[in-house]
View 1 (cartoon, helix red, strand yellow):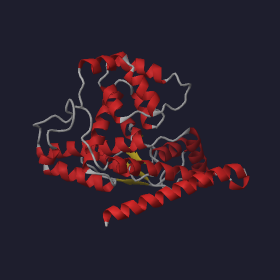
View 2 (cartoon, one colour):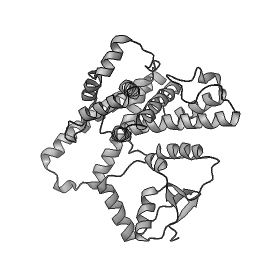
View 3 (tube, helix red, strand yellow):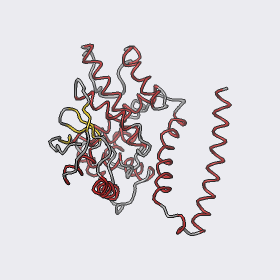
View 4 (cartoon, one colour):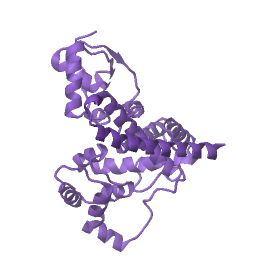
Length: 313
């Protein structure tokens, strides 16, 4: 164990870690104060890359901790590692999971380009994907590996790369909006994210004001879509030029992929409820309602498993 508190926290690296709610942070703080820090902090040089919240608490309260140092050739390699490490969690929002998959792919592509000195095309094209990533064996292999690691298709990895590029573009002018999108507070579709990324800052600010007229409530897809499509800038663009240029290539795996990314959030909610609920104090009515829903879910899951087995045999 060490009392060293000379490590530092990188703002960008921290933004890739699932943020803790005030309650989660408080619970973690009380646990570490009472029992010590039993999770090893991971660092790159003097920068914390995993266990950031644990390190903050230990540094603030002068609590000893263990750490391991990992070695990477460049900052981009660290970002790719953080993305892959975070994607192992089962409590990410669907938006955060998409963003991390896309960012890991884009970052690893940049590393490949640097190593091969392939500077013939821009890292972030104005629209769409690289002319043909399949023509570049290393990029193709990278996309296939990331797809396999996350149980999605090659095309979905590229689709999420578009999503990531759009969010990073929006983040340059409206970082708070991106935080709310990744946290799941604002439910905005892939297509609408692309549209927002093309807006001038004045229109993005107008959009934010309209979205925030919800008294802190979650903004669902329908509400966000209506606000965005009724925006004068978007309406004008649609009237002048109708195009499917920014729409992702048709992906037959898309419905299954959506479900694959959604179910981990259900599992996280179920596990948190099991852990944090005093079932003896829950009313019979509440238990019956949840039991009914779970039985319906169980029936649907059995139907889905039967279909998956049928189609793969």
